[in-house]
Image 1 (cartoon, rainbow, N blue to C red):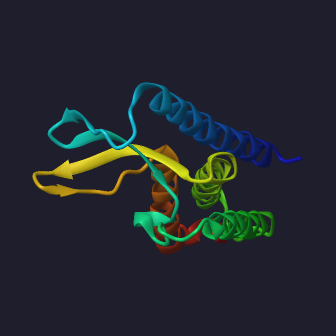
Image 2: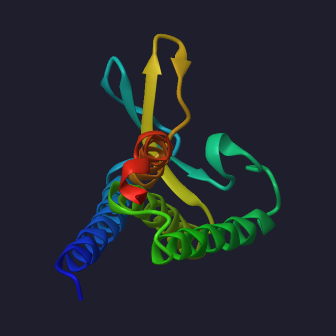
Image 3: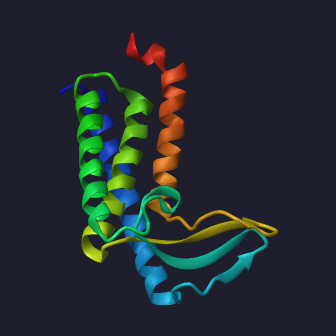
Length: 162
């Protein structure tokens, strides 16, 4: 096997395992250290605010009766499979594939929460004066970074595809 391809596999395993490990360990810390719905002031821009998110991003479908967790887990597996196929077929290379693995790992880490807890555990909250961003976790941050990198790859990474 080509050495560059082996290095890519190692990098992808490191990205995948790091995101899932750091996310799950941070959630373990949060659940042991924080009280639900009692924000702790960290600084003028950030709180620790432990909440269960039964929905998707920004609480989308948060107030359903539980069926949405199965839907979101299924969607996560479909998206992960789609990205793996794109990588396998060579449509995503180098940092485009790295971005996809950030999205895959973040999505699967949140899927573990949905399957184990019935909801995603969020605990990081940014705020500015009276405006507060919805609570999120490290998996959400990995997904967001992956999406930003994937958009950038689509715009400027075309030289990698030739």
